[in-house]
Length: 50
Length: 568
Image 1 (cartoon, rainbow over the protein chains, first blue to last red):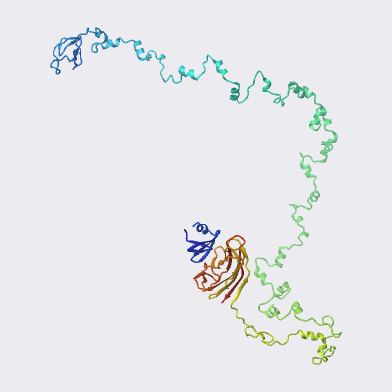
Image 2 (cartoon, rainbow over the protein chains, first blue to last red):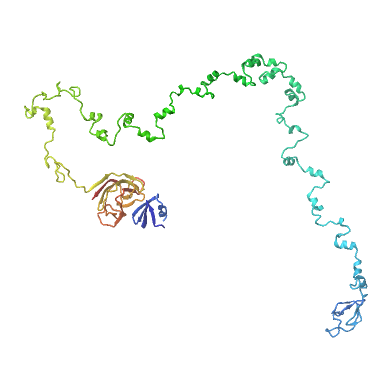
């Protein structure tokens, strides 16, 4: 599974667990904090399938 | 043992003859060559007996030809019939090549059996033809052929519709056999109508071209007296006079025999002779002489004024020399026009204010300090005085601010900490989505190093009993997509719930220090894990306050009042 993703030209390294917040949102622990990833982001589909 | 025939021919070798008892007729008890007299079909003695050719088979010599004596006889007893019979066919005879047909020559031909199974025999053509039905013919032809017993079906009346019967044709058209009759039935009026005009009649040419038709035309005699014939152009030209040419041209043409007459002296009046030009004008070949002949007086006269001389600036007035002077427009806007009493300056009580001296304006005559009487009787003045502010006394009639008097000139500085960035009301929302209840934009440059942000938040939930959660995020856009979690409030499970949701964030110049964002707790009054969130104070950020319910309805949660304060 990819542990690096980019959003708004910022690279995030996944460092911790992934929390399902809602049907379209995840909380992903990264090196830059807990990021809300939703289904408009490219990395969402890969993370939600794990 | 070996066999010798009557002629002495020897056959075989090693033959063994046995007797009736089955024992070989040999001596020696079963081994070696027999000896003794021969008997039976043999005669003589062993080991070389002879054969009695007449015993049993008396026609040996009649049944077989001896090979060594008469091979030719054997051959000569064969007949052509024997050969034909043996072969089963008549072999090719080089004396009868025409009668010989080889197998390759027979390839194009059919055997009788093959022909019988392939073709109908000519002996029964009717049977073949009778096997073909009308539908088979129609199908093969692709149409129904003409039936001589039923011609009307083949050619129907409908098919004949476009055609004329002989009777109709005779009534409609002239037969080609009588073209004269056709023509004879055409009248002259038919011809004229068809042509659109009366054709020429060779018996009456005059009638065709009548006098009226000739009216635009000239008779030869008239033409001869009116026009010059093309055959005699010289006579035509010689009758033209000079005046006729001049009139026609509108001017007197040049006469090569008299050029002086063409250019008359009157015509030369505006012109200079070469001699005159030389005494009046400088030739273009001598521009220097021309220039030197011009005097300053000539220039001044030609210009109409004395031109500026850089050796005589005093005689020339430059624009800078005009500096002290006013233009008429400047003067009118700078200076008061001459005053004229009652015209452009008013009078007072009919008296002109122009001139010297003093003008006395009479009134009540009273002077300040000289007003007499009881003030309370002056009700309008008393009312006006009552509305006036009494003299302010700091701390007595006007408060101080933080101990600072507000009286006097200057500015009073008020201590700004904390600075309230906003105090806003969020929305109570239903639904299971994590959605924005309120948000606030922190403009770039608001937060500086060592500043802290204090967020005081009142959460309310007015319905539902399932768990509802409030969160705080920060993002560079007013959206939850890609937002960073800053804080999570305690879960609210009952209806009509309230929670004080507060956090303090510290900015060290690079990161915001926040309390563990995922720890669901109302306030950060207790110690906990520090989380660093990258923050660029030059950028705009949005603090986002989100809510989420566990059921779609009726649970609703909202950031009811959000106060954001900055400590610098």
